[in-house]
Length: 177
Image (spheres, rainbow, N blue to C red):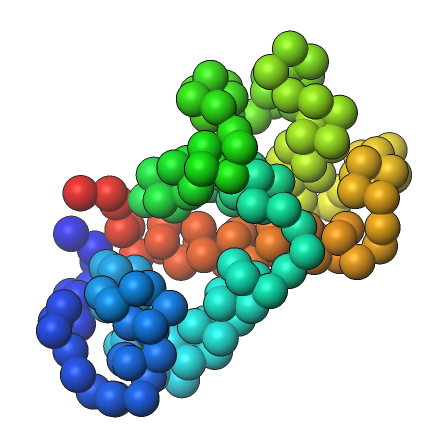
């Protein structure tokens, strides 16, 4: 249970907004949505923004989900980790990598499980999440690994977005069932 009550799972209003959230979610409202819906304005912006981040960016799914999982672990947002680990694996990650992500500091040095690009993403994600400030060395490694400015900007946007998500989840104490 979260710190505030959930909007009912069968909520119908505001109709256009609830329909849009359901469409993005494949028909159902997640517990996260049922907390957000206490503020329709926040939900509307969140739904649009997260749809863009999840479906319109050029960062491949594996790297996107890798970053999301690391943000979740660093911020202790288990709900987020449980939601994104299967998507990381579906995107090409392995179960072994998923287990290693429970310790991001060790994972970013693990040359057996993670390639150079993945380790650069891990380092960028860890620094942005744990320290906010990113070192020049980490930034340059991520820039080199991703190969173009657009993908770098998008990855930074993914990391920033999922820091927002995890902080919302943690503040409201939404935990996996």
